[in-house]
Picture 1: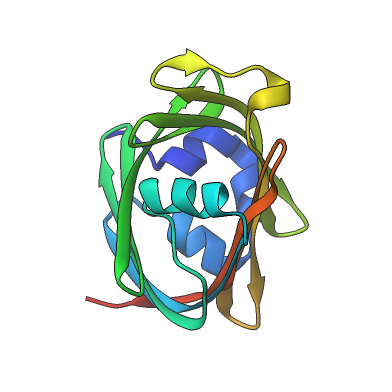
Picture 2: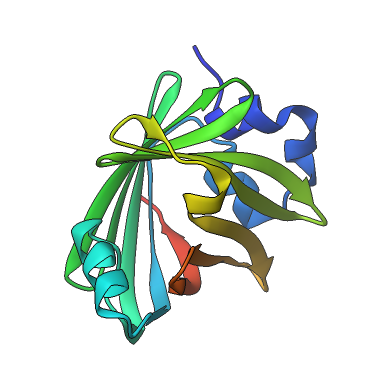
Length: 177
């Protein structure tokens, strides 16, 4: 049996994650988490269209969130629902980095555990299989951390020429089956 994706990615550093992050990222079975999010989006029409095409969350406060995490061997599938928008991504490890594929886009992240939090820094991006140079690719420094016993996520995404395209953050709690 293949161990959890983030355990393979982080190695021994995974034990430094806060308990809710370990529950999410260091277990082998499927999980469902729910909560609420605040989503801020750009006022730029092109940036908003791009978010809609990628099925990213719409602007809102107190937006209900459900995320289903499916573990399938060396791969994870994340099914997200933010309000009435849903999207799916597939995660795997490639060359020591986390690669998340979402539709025509594939993002490569350096992942680290720091002070109980999980940091994911975008270091590569492909669209339709074509790698974008640094000056043309999105920027993202996503952080997952624990506040109280709750899992918190904070995901800002910026694009060259457009600045902040979307910033979504919120809290999730596991639903026990």
